[in-house]
Length: 99
Image (cartoon, rainbow, N blue to C red; front, side):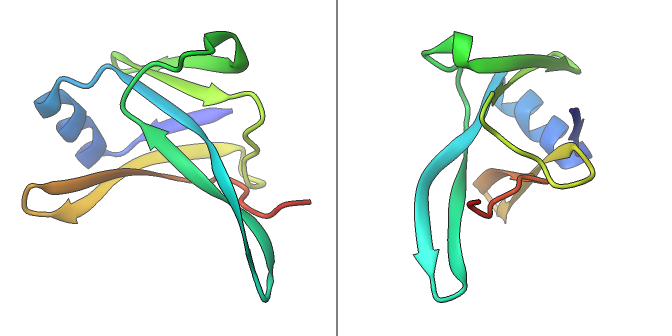
């Protein structure tokens, strides 16, 4: 699995002194088109570390839950979005559809 950090993400984590990121699935949701999983990106090390694969990229430890599935490109991209001081880290490339 390849993990890419966007330039804005790198700037954000450096300015906020963030060293650990955890990527996992949150709760499942359903809609008229089917069920999907909601991704969670946390700014901390996971508690059950043995359930995660650790990737260190540019000084940031990224913990990806072993149950996470990627889209066909097998790549996750971490990005930041927001306005002024309200910023959110999000991930692209997760397979959200429940089988």
